[in-house]
Length: 393
Image 1: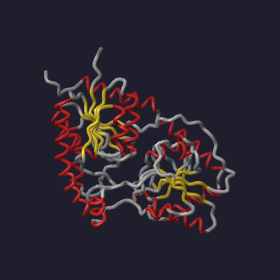
Image 2: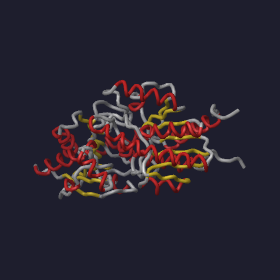
Image 3: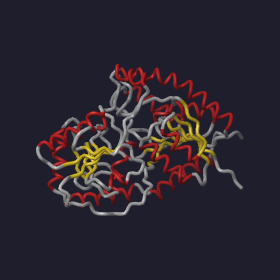
Image 4: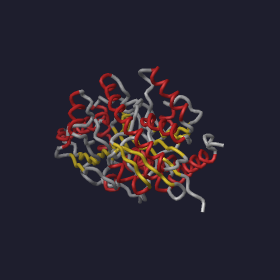
């Protein structure tokens, strides 16, 4: 029997995230043809990934962040000191993996882990796939960004962008291919109950400040005070840090989590963290994604599959979102008024909920087919392994 090739998957963060959710789905369906070994940071990722292969967990995975939202600037450059510490742990565990496992391919699940992936490629001398799930920073520190991209293309054999918007921030596209996030759930289409006296507005994801959760709570609170019958349904969790790290982040003003007391409101229904997203989507009318990222997240196509329209802070249309087709957009992240106008529109025009939700479903099925994207990923794995130019002759 032919041995299954071994894939080393590097998951840079240990917390639950959209990138981890997408990775789990692909691994679940590819494990019949490949053996997976995981290297990740301690956290919820460990329990999720250990079902699919041997896992090596570290105190930290060495990263470099050049993403649009959280690239280093000002005091954030001090985070490099943390990465230098993580470098020691990273080198130790990769050396340990090399002693115990023969690897055929490396798959980095998020570009922030590029330093770790480079070390792994030097050690294992096998092809490297880099998954890019966030917009790359091209606005500031242009010299640093250009250097970062040159390093990416020097070491990566294939670069996977999750959509065209992300692809456009990578610049050099010769080694790139778009492979989209997918959803692994059976969904029965059902129209929303429009007879409810309340408009149920949903938010799902992390509670970071840049995601706009505070502004959404404030906007809904204002409308409730004006006698609009609106309920805000939240699903997600606060990133927990250890005591010392939390204190350091607060002192340096690097903390991104919102104050939990701000979601303790009568009009807020807080579902907490949900592994099964059915409960969330089936109990909302509209999804709100008020992020400052100027990009549609995984939630946009998830909402599409559940036939829910979206309200999103974005400056132009994307693959997964078309203004006034599957939802409404507003451009100013800091404008509570613009957000409130969108909420009022759906409150007063509930018939548009089903119409725009159905349009969103069409977009989701067009771009995020599970079968097609898994087939593409398997083909990429196979081609790189079979044409490994790093093999000793």
